[in-house]
Structures are given as structure tokens and as C-alpha cells.
Image (tube, rainbow, N blue to C red; front, side):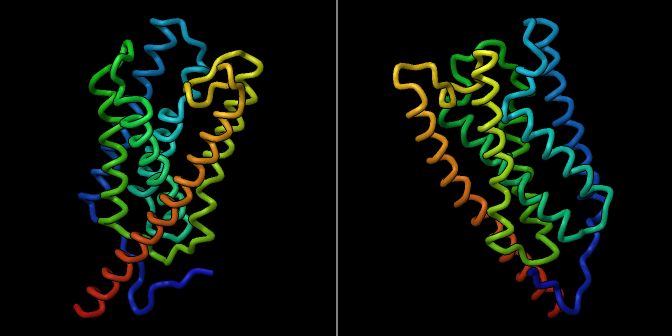
Length: 219
């Protein structure tokens, strides 16, 4: 169950916010297209491999949600997808900065697309969430549904990896001497962290929603 705002209908985003969302979406689509195209055309990477990075999928999802937000009025359904995008992009930024060392030592890293996908988009989605909080309260149960995509992603990578003998991330690669044991441990630890992050994102959104509702009521 969700609790709608009382006394104040959901507000449509102003033209400046819609414009920023559209520009960010275009930047993200362009950065993904550039990186994927570079891998396919210049490095001969399998197209499915190029699109199997969580970075690419989370940014495509986030950009799509931004376009939706730029064009549509606020709704609880839209905001649930928006919250999911915030979580996925924050995960992308944190994993890249920590487990992948910020791309240090990686070959063929394009500076502008790397900045868009791993730094600008995570920060922008979080700021968007704080600036325009959800129209209705998001429950803990609803926020935990945001773990569905990362879970399916991990399953897809492990199953496909067994077939094609390729894994996009070393922490999901079971071909080491210890096999699947460290991979399962990594997945379990990351799942717990993402669950905490999802609850935190929904909690912050609810706080901002309550604050904006109180401001509107007082005004």
C-alpha cells in the first residue's frame, strides 16, 4: 500500500528539470553508443558481450527513465522505476570506483564517456531524486523489488559465462582456483549492500517527499 499526498496533487516537473533530464538521457545514450560501437567496430568484441556490462545496462535503463520523467506527469509507477534507476546507477559508480579502481590500468577507456557513465549519471540521478522526490511514499517492500534486476543480471552472467567462457567482471568469474565459492560470496555480499542501498534511497525519497509536502502546505 502507498500513501498518496494529501491536499496537494503531484506536480509536473518544470521545463528546466525536464530539459536537464532529456539532455542527460541523450548524453548517456551517446556514451553507451560510443563505447559499445568502439568495442564492436574497432576491437571486434561480440555485441552481446559489449552490452553485458552492468554499466551499459544500468545507464540505458537510467536514460530511458529520464526520458520518461521528462515527458510524463509524476506517478507512483514512474517513481518506482526512477528509484530503481537511482540504485542501479549508484551501484555502477561505487563498483567502478572501488572494485575496479576507477578504471586505472584499463585499456581503451574514453575519458568523456567514462565520466558520463560512471560519475555524472550516478550523481545526476541521485540529485534528481532529491530535487523531485517521489509523488507517493515508497515502502520497504517496494524498494526491495529493485534487487530483481541485479539478481537476474548475476544469474545471466553466470549461466552465459558457462556457455561462452567469458565474464565481464573478475568478481563474477568462477574460473579461478576456488571456483564458484568466492563468486557466490561476492554476489551475497553485494546483494546485501544493494538491499541496504535500496532501502536508504527509498527512505531519503520519502523524507524529501514529506519535506516538500510540508513546504507546500505551509505555502
